[in-house]
Length: 460
Image 1 (cartoon, rainbow, N blue to C red):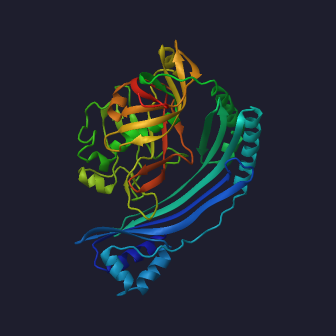
Image 2: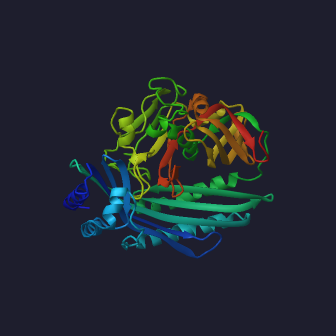
Image 3: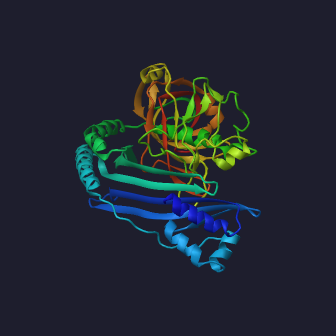
């Protein structure tokens, strides 16, 4: 959306008597080439569209509208609708009809070539393992989004966000128990990702071999070591949301107003940084046009800052730090995470495991239940192992980690030096009615000295 067109559109809405107007335009294309579950034939899944979100303010308060059309079409629609239905809808804050967005084609030959190589490597390697009732899937996904933000005070900003994700999955039966594994990677350059396919698949197959002859353990309080990368999902869910400016203002919030106070172990420094190149949560400006900023949320265990959009920043008497995000033009911006991670510490992962006489090692977490404001959680362990005499040994049966965010942060007594970021097409964040927002998470190996563990057979 060019600046001149944005200004003309703003003037049309101001003519309705509104005092402030913000225009958000989005063009998005998501293409995914994947195999069907248990099938050989790949399929395309495509989401392509655009639309305009309009936030208007005045004597009657603030309202948010969305229009599934281009800015040029919206301008013509507004001009031709004076004193008719659209004028009444704009004045009342109702939304126009849900029309089909404009579709734009893209060249996908590079994605096809990458997918064919990934498919061949993963299918051959997985099937060579000879597991019972095995089937595997893979996908290559591209994401491309262009956004523009303009306001009636003359502000104008735009951003272009693009990245690729690579995902492989496998399912099989182990002693009559259904088993599942998945691995992901991503980045800005598809050819660079493709160059690493051999190592990516080989690493996944090596870890796949670990997942056999599992044992059942007793529930209760355990010392738990969370591996790097994927297990940071737990920190995102149970701690990160509580540090978003709107939720931190809730009466039941656990972090609100605790600036400078201890909220975690001294070894924990938690950061949200949308400026890291090549991650799915990255951007140059947020969805309100504010400059992206690396924000230290917790430093050496003490609360330093929250994540703000423009509205939450006013509530806290401060300025936005570039964390106003939207799932699409259909929604207003709210405070959201981007790329959230625990900074690397001083211990090697080998040291952390060696210093744990008995405990659990978690390589991968799955879904669960969390309360956004209080941080209470129950999260499934997808890949877990027993630690015996300072060594990772046998895989465990179905487990759940149970607790709350503040206790979890305070119980971290080891932070490793092996920080790893994790993102995939499945790495999305849900908050209120805004689902599936792209994010990344990360952490080094960390040890939690005590956390409650439930077994899959029942709650302990």
